[in-house]
Length: 67
Image (cartoon, rainbow, N blue to C red; front, top):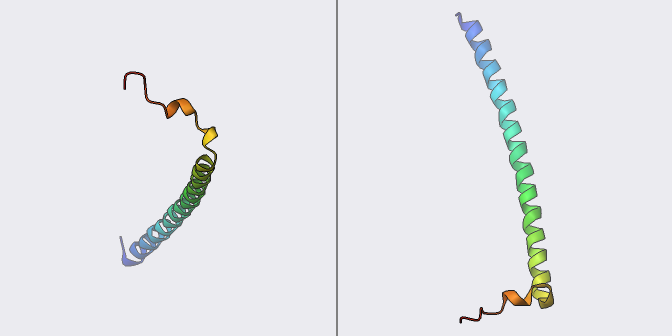
């Protein structure tokens, strides 16, 4: 393999790695956005449950009879 073909091969590999790196970066960004949205939704649900105690089943708060 001569030097020119080696350089071409290295450039092709570099470009493939750059494409894969961008795909991974995009996937990570999308996952982070989804995680942020889920965290915000969880906080909203927590606040709603704290603000309205009747939404939670009262039986879950009671101790079983053997206590």
